[in-house]
Image 1: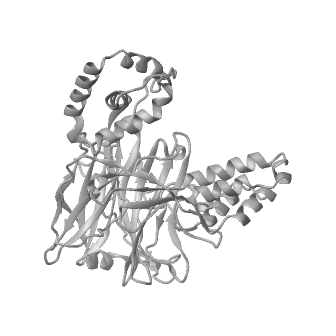
Image 2: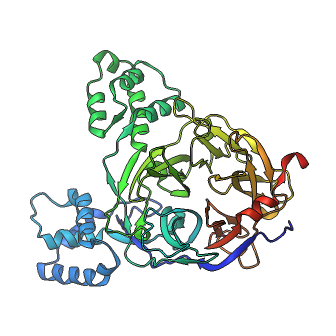
Image 3: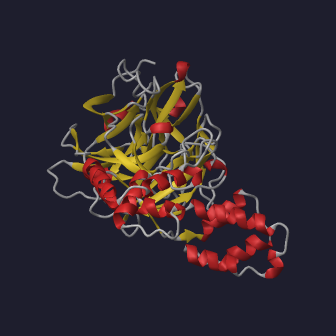
Length: 493
């Protein structure tokens, strides 16, 4: 794949930083191949310490770890509560003893220890204190730690003036978002039941009894008042189990406003994403009333199955997570359009695993079967093609950065253009690749891969963050006008 040089690599890379750690619950024995919970024995040994020993041990722990985490003693107290049922009821513990027990049931997890990759970029909610020609960008990152568990982290960059970029400091203790009461959506439950092909009297009753938006208490109240004649049916308990599973998939997390974006971590919060939150593609939408909202799609992975998820946030501080439903949501790599097109909600997807397609959200909140846009057809993309983030609106059309996979599973980035009013029409594409791994970028945790989850336009330049072999994040910029001029109308092929 030889091509003119449209993209300029910038002299900036982000490497994994194993000092970026969070605190997780640690229960001895549960990390073994044959689970043998050793919690009770550990608590018995801790209870044999006298108060002086407890005090000294706690002081040592706090001295070693206090500067590395937000509210260290609060986390220890929470972890104590999770194991407190193993403390004999007749024993009265001092606050120091409870905190120390919590410390023994905690461990640090380095969120980037294995890899850092697959970024996306949007305009930051805070555009204050900037110079002429500058824009503050928020960058989402796939960070991979021990056990190949992925979470979503963030960084902040200043773009401009011209082709200049600088990263703001990523130092300081990290914080995992705190679960808050989610306001569930009735249409999400209905779409999940349609995916599960469940349509019976029990499901109909629940759908009719719930309001359009409901919290966990309202949900439990409806299930608690299910009529007896429905409860007696043999299929009802299975139906209720599915309903509970669908509702539990959706959740919300929030961060204190005092915690900078770079210190916020979106960590797996449900069984369906227990092995990772992969490849978040963030996009900014400006609503008709002028308010800004951010959406992102990502892949939830439980170690066996994948599932599409959607994040919605107005400030990158409070995040609502919902499941994606419908035939087109059953594979990786969905990317949302930044606005409705002709009244339709659209997304790019790869529902067959190898073809880039366009899907529309129907009235039942389900993503419909995709219409093909790009199929593998060139030497460098014959294995599969997909998107590198959400489409970017330009005067010439929707600019879509793509990726193709060729021999030796080598990933490279390309581009194409969709019609503004009818995005199912591909009107032009770049006949050659835009960016491919160079000799340094080809080496890493996953060799020979360049991959991005989305860039943005600022001051006539397309800014592209990208993962290089899953070991570092690089940055490139492209003159937008030059890129669009290089596109070849599709009928000339």
